[in-house]
Image 1 (cartoon, rainbow, N blue to C red):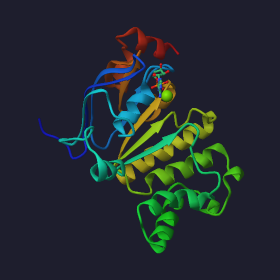
Image 2 (cartoon, protein in one colour):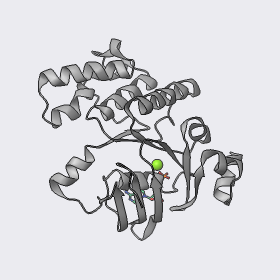
Image 3 (cartoon, rainbow, N blue to C red):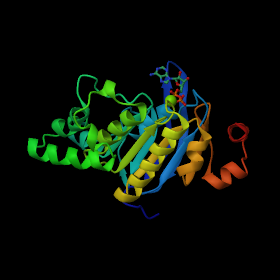
Image 4 (tube, rainbow, N blue to C red):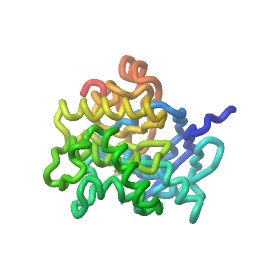
Length: 245
Ligand SMILES: Nc1ncnc2c1ncn2[C@@H]1O[C@H](COP(=O)(O)OP(=O)(O)O)[C@@H](O)[C@H]1O
Ligand SMILES: [Mg+2]
């Protein structure tokens, strides 16, 4: 098998919490540079799977590969370097309310030890990319939900990650704002040639920007395929229920 530079491969990934299998035996291959969706009801195991894929949590068993390299066993600096290739955004934005917009976006660059000058120019570039240059000095409480998610996207992209993980990133937003954030994510993905892995319980989100999708149910990946094939001809009850809405 030939490995793309940043193909993500999961082999039998399993995570238990107090005996409960939150994710069980997950096998999945995600190609470099695509927008991949993971859909399932609440409690299906989506966030747990994402945390393992982004190296925030270690699996109890199974293997995770980026390109050809096994990464779930990494430690210390090697783990930190790999984590720096992952950006993540969440439903609740997870921003620092004590910092203004610029301070939030600058944070990961400060941690990574960039100079003030490098940080300032990178933040300016990121503000432009997510189209909130006019909000550079704003406090978070002055922003709408959509603007906060733009700040979170800029912060996630600041260290130039290879992969952007989105965990229910539009679930707290109204339909119009959801569309604008999805269109931003799609534009950034093609501009930056990153991989986007998008977890949601919302069908419309998957349908509007993903190429391929995995369906999760009860901790298991029960179906995978192109969005068209899974949604037009769902094989499992879990997928059928999601498609019916
Ligand atoms: N840190 C945790 N401790 C204990 N149980 C957890 C933890 N995280 C998730 N779970 C459980 O694992 C299952 C899957 O959760 P989660 O991955 O958050 O699902 P989803 O994101 O699809 O809603 C749920 O039953 C949840 O209660
Ligand atoms: Mg979740």
